[in-house]
Image 1 (cartoon, helix red, strand yellow):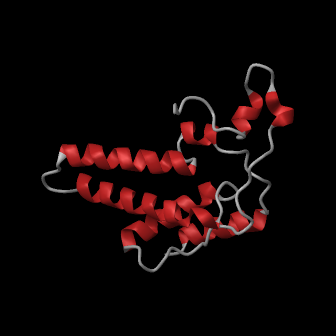
Image 2 (cartoon, rainbow, N blue to C red; image 1 turned 30 degrees about the vertical axis):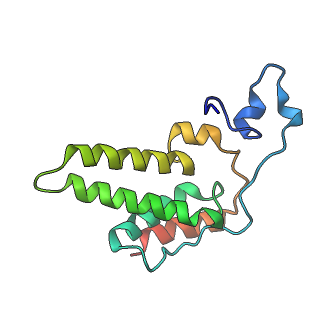
Length: 139
């Protein structure tokens, strides 16, 4: 199966199509449980830092079911940073890790292509967005 085009029933799919299928598409929304503002304790400190920094960008777009994907993204970014800061960086490993980071970013909607394929974010309580921003600043 091809991966071209928007995901079925996404906000982008509702806007496009041969006959403007906006009326036939039901919006998909993340679960009502928000992402936890604290990183899991099993994440290394570098990955916890990435987790906290990424959290504000996901408020309203991802729910608690996305914790595993966000943790995978944080681990991949931390590993990429470690590899690029090495005395003798392995370019093939860096390219491979970059592909992993890009795949996670697309799945979470952190890249432009990923954002286009995700549903429209629901209206978020400004207090929860503020809490996520504060949580990203607290170490």
